[in-house]
Length: 197
Image (cartoon, rainbow, N blue to C red):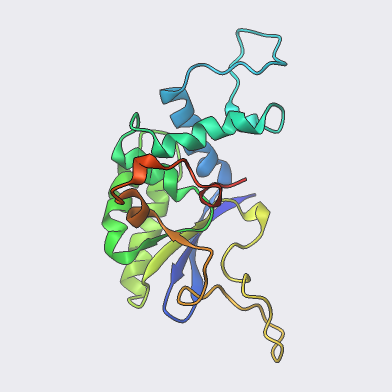
């Protein structure tokens, strides 16, 4: 079964801090919940049945622009700040600094949809108690796409082992709360590097 993976970052490395079973309860559950709450009913051009519920998350069947309507809610003033944090946490390469983690935990616990977010909040809280050198938290929303963080640095030529992402030297990450709190946040479209594809 698929799962959502959570990672703790230190100055020198990254390690798994836990997982929640069934990745469909992660990003996909967040996206479909916010889609139903904020966007008009979706009917793909190929649909024959007006009574069925369709989702923009099935964009492989329709247009890639369909799911982008959901992802664009991240920078929409329609959604609450807590929902924005939750949405942003589902995107690729996103991290949250430990000093901002309370905002994320609060948003996860407030989210209305049926998701794994409360379990994720519990995992994060426990990890921060047990591993005081953690400086940031990150996610891999679904285990079926491979490991996002612990093998992205290539392989050590001597040991042959995977080299984890280095927060100090890596350039692919971005910080969620820092991005949201920028003065010009609403002036920019969602960046392609922020979203999962």
